[in-house]
Image (tube, rainbow, N blue to C red):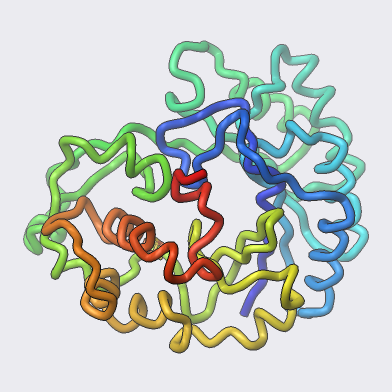
Length: 300
Ligand code: SF4
């Protein structure tokens, strides 16, 4: 049952992080209009199951008035709301409160702030810490997201017995992380990668929607286009087994995807997502409706 709609409000971001799985950067194109936001929220009401609406990106605070109006409409429509930001705007304690103050009146239920060395390698205290402290002073529910450089962790007995290295740090090997972060990490045979470990592709609890209309089950893996088919219809007609990418992934992970589509690939990958993402990239021209947008795959 779909309970969460996450707006990728914009693909643009003031940062260009190595771990970014949507390939955001300052000059990235693609930002929702207000009318498009209204359309998605109307459809979310129609679905009758959606409880939460998030605004994220990219960096949603780059389009501050649009984000605030989206939060207002979503709140007025009866949804709990949240935002995810890198807090670049928290230049001082006073400024941090200035940017967050409107959220109090909007009854925003979750402020999630990225606070890690990808975003702030040198600054102490980080703008993110300032933002978290300001949110607490204002009585806003707040939390931090911390993703660090991948490390090989030893001592996870169960995993070690299976022979699979445990990679810590929390980065997901999709998007720019595949280009920037996989070097030197241990790899596994492709035949062992037989499930999707992170997303519930059969019964997604939340989807990410982007300004081009793509409804993401995982970054760059789309249910379909909501500008062509209304979102509520897309969701109610979604059949994971007949989806050309999700079907094989559910039946046998990236390994089965590779067996079914016979595209040349490497023998070893860091993990399931690394294989899945690169294999999807190889299929992108075959399934443009479901593997999109191209910029999430680092393509123009
Ligand atoms: S990249 Fe593929 S394997 Fe990883 S979570 Fe997404 S759909 Fe699943």
